[in-house]
Image 1 (cartoon, one colour):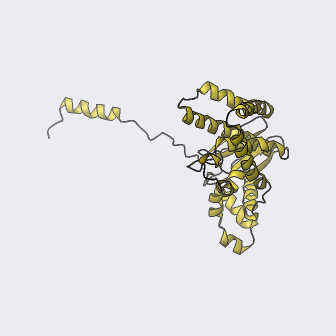
Image 2 (cartoon, helix red, strand yellow):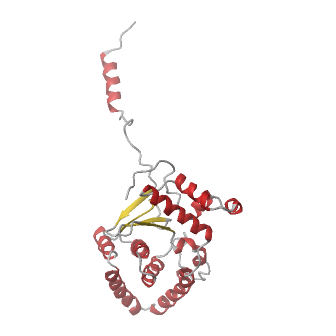
Image 3 (cartoon, rainbow, N blue to C red):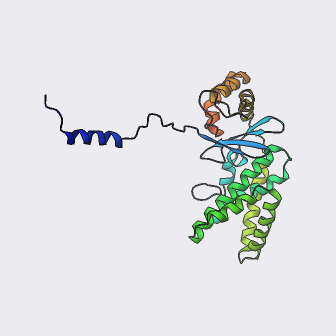
Length: 269
């Protein structure tokens, strides 16, 4: 049998050396992100900061699962935007505008003062800053520097400091030529937000959130879908209720599909 030439052998070795070995590379399949704060941590969808969230209060050791008012009652906000696109609280892609997110953040201060409300308010402040920055870039055609964005994000950690700078921003807006239209628009949006803030939550949603909290307490961190499903189906004793709204459809509707599918996970408190 004819032996391969030295040149062919070298090419074969070179080809093998250039092919990276991916057998030991770990793929990150985690769908959620966990943000740490001194008093709590909050977990939500990695690609959607307004998804359903799980909050852990480090002081009390309790868990709180919920979904933002915006997602729960979004259809109410999206309707009746008026003929002028600027009157709508959402843009053409149905993404909430920065000023709407800002209103949601500011009005959170007047709710009950507990750890979950503080965390949600902080989340609204961060979302508002990022969306307002994005809209400013689109309007001016100029990119906002990472330094400027970081300054505003740092301000969002302190509620009083954040409100101070937003107050100064509002004064500038009021002095602008279109101040009247600006205030009328914000007034209409506040009127839309007000009834939503006291809107009762569907009993099925409450059962789902409670199931997430119980499962989280049991595992000491982010629970699996399997664990939450088991608790939910045991808690819901009405067969008709299960038939009308299955666990999977509720999980999707409440934006909790980011929960890991199986295994106990490693996200401990």
